[in-house]
Amino acid sequence: MRNRFRHGVHAGLFIAVLASVLVIASASMASAQTESGESLRVLALEPGVKATVVAPTRFDRRAPVELILYALPNGNTTEETMGRTMADSVGWRFDIQHIAAQTRAFRARGYAHTVLVYLEAERLSWPDWRRRLGYPQANARIVALVDELRRAIGNPPNLSVTLASHSGGGSFAFGFIEGQTDLPAWLDRLVFLDSDYNFAALHGPPLARWLRAASRHRLVVLAYDDRDIMLDGKKVVSDSGGTWRATKRLREYFMQSEGVTFADDTVAGFARARAPQMELLVHPNAQNRILHTEMIGEMNGYLHALLVGRESYDRGAPLLGTPRAYSAQVRGAVVLPPAQPPAVPTPPRRGAGAAMGGRVFMASIDSLVRDQREAAVQRELLNGNIPDLLRALRTVRDSATTADGRLHVIEYDVMPDYLAVGSNDDFVRIPMTPRTAQAFAQAYGYVLPTRRMVDAIWRAAEDQLDPQPLTDMREASATFLQHHQLIEAQRGARERTRLVAGIKKDVVVSNRLLERADRVAIYGWHYPDGRPIQPLYVGHVDWYVDYSHGVRMVRRTMRVDGVSMTFEQIAAHPALHVLVSDEGPLATVRLATSPSR
Image (tube, rainbow, N blue to C red; front, side, top):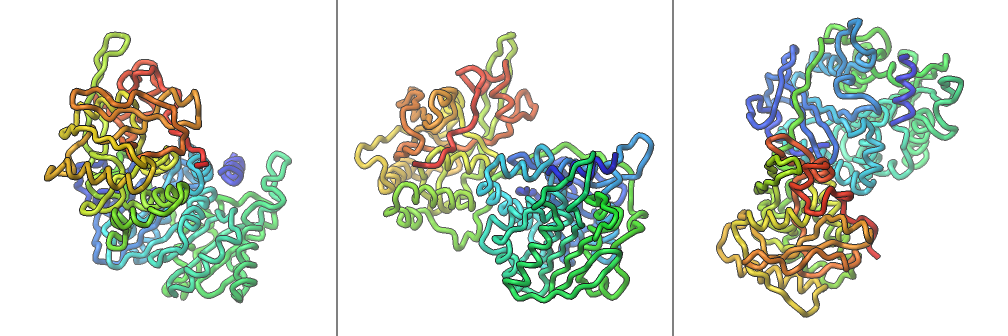
C-alpha cells in the first residue's frame, strides 16, 4: 500500500498578503496553538491556494529568522505532509514525510525563529494548478505570492528564505524561476526533494547567476535512480522522465555551460556530487524500489537539505539516512483552523519608488500598436502597479428572493473605482481587453461583475457621476487619458476611496458570451436616474477596447447570509444565482482569454 502511495505521488503530480502573520493575537484571522509551542494559521489564497503558516509562539523578529516555503507533493494534504504519531485508525500517509517534526528538529539545532509555510494547491497538484491557470500567469502569481509573504512578515533584518519542494511541488519552484529574469538576492536556499523533474536548459542560467550573486546561496537536490522502478508490472517513469535523468541534466549543464567541477563521493548510501554552493544527492537504488517519499521522511532528507552547508552541521556526522533523527519531535494530530482569505488580495506596488506613474506610463504606450500596448498594461497590473486606493475595497450589500420564497442577503467587496495604473497621486484609469482583465482577476482572486452586480454597485455608490461620452479617436491611448482627466475634474476634491459609479461602461460576464466566445460583454454607464447608456452588448470582438470601457474588480469570495461562498458557487447555484445574475444560472464566469488578434 505504501508503495502504491509513493507511485501516485511520483507519477502525478501562494502566497498572499498575510496580515501580521506572526502576531498571535490578531482578531482578523482564525488561529490555533499546537502542543509544540507553535502558532498555526491557514489562509485561503486566490486562485485555489491554501497556505498553512506555522510559527513559534515565542518569536523575536530581531533575531535571525528562517522562512521556509514548502510546496507540497502531489496527492498530499497539508495534514498528511505535517505527519503525526501513528495509531491503528490513522492512515499511513501521515507517517511518510513528517515535515512538522523535522522542522522542530531543525529549530532545536539553533534555528528557533523558523517560520514554516505549507503551500497546498487546489486538487493537490501544483502542475495541474499551473496548467489550468496558464503558465505565464501562474508563474507571475507565484513570484508575487513569495514576494508578498516576505513583506507580510515584516521582512526581518536577518531573514533567510528557503524555497523547498517535494514531488510535484517542484512545479511551484520552477514557476518561481520562470516567472522572473533573475532569482532575488534574498532567496538563500533552493531545495528540490525528488522534485526536479522538469529541469531544462532554460533554468540553468538563472540558477547559475543566482549562485554567483552571493556565497550564501545554496542549491540542494535529492533524487534516486528511478529509471526502472515498476508498479503492477509497469514502469513508473517514461524513458526520458524521472528525477535521476533530470538531476543528470542539471549536473551536465553546470559542468558544460558554467565550467563547474564536482567532487564525487558517497554518504549514507547516496552518490554525492559537491561543488561550491551545490550538493546533488542521488540514491543508486540497487534494489529498484520506489524511494520517492522514503528519502524525505525515513532518511531525513528534508532535515539534511535544510542543514547542509551550515558550518556547525558540516563539521559533524550528516543526518542523511536511517534511523529517523526527529522521532522525539513527532506529535499528535493537528486540527487546522478554518482557512481565511487575506485582508488584501492585491499585491503592494513592487518597488514603489521605481514603478511608473500613470502619466509616464501613458506616454510610454502612446506610440505602441494595440498588442504591444495591451502587453504593457498587463505587465504593470500583474506587477501590482495600481494605486493603493484600489486596495481599499468597499462592501456592496444586495438581496433577492429565491423561488422558494426565502429572502437571501449577499455581500461582496469591490474596488472603489476602475482598474488604473500608477500611484494614488499619479494614476490613470486604463481600458483593457477581457484577456488582460481576466489575467489580473485570476491572479489575485477577483472576478468581473455581472449586469445585476453592476446595477447593485451603482446603487451603492457614494459618488454617482454624470457620464461624459467622447466621440473622436475612441480607441487611442490619448483619448483614454483625456477621459480620465475629465473624470478627475468631475470628482474634484472628493475622497478617492469613495465608491464611484457612472463614469465607465463595465466589462462584464454574461451567458451571452456563450453565443460568441470571441466577444467582449459590456454594460452600464448609468445616468443619474439609474438608466444605463449601454444595454448588455456583445457586438464587439474581444480585442476591441475604447476609452469608455472600465474594469471593476470584485473579490471572488463573497458572503451569502453570512456564509462564505465563491462567486462561481453562487452564480451556478440553481436557487442562489438570483443574487448575482438576472440571466439565470451562469454557464460561464470567465471572460474570453484568446490572444488578441
